[in-house]
Length: 162
Image 1 (cartoon, rainbow, N blue to C red):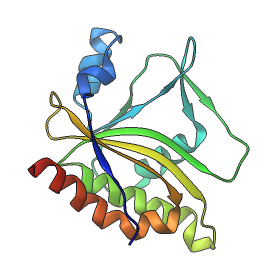
Image 2 (image 1 turned 30 degrees about the vertical axis):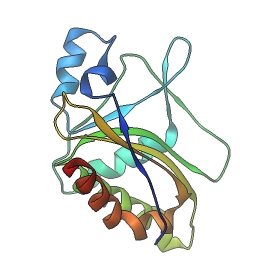
Image 3 (image 1 turned 90 degrees about the vertical axis):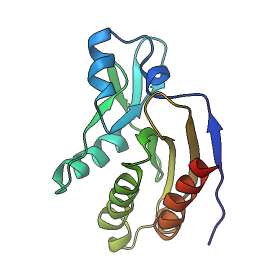
């Protein structure tokens, strides 16, 4: 199995929603998953690949609420073969569900058709929404992510036991 590293971060649900209206902050604080933008100068940017993934999540028979950490979104498309999922934040309790859905998405949309794209994402996990997070930055092929997904779940669980 490939190695990965989970690092400490000072971020949490409050820092990810800082600067948003109080209504939007309250709405996002209730979500299981936060989609963290790559900030442009005036608008929060998300890759089109995130929308494809969220559409897949909506089609699944799972209760997983998500929200974008912005009030003005712009979706950008990159002209390469990589899958740019950007950054997500979730709670430790929801993390195994999220990683399983992501793994299934990579299989259902790519691997079963013989494609093995490079995947780029950052996953931030908090034990509780007001506590510091642990972060995994992944850049590798879809098959590798799928193979190490159970180890990533275990890695986050172990990281919070320390």
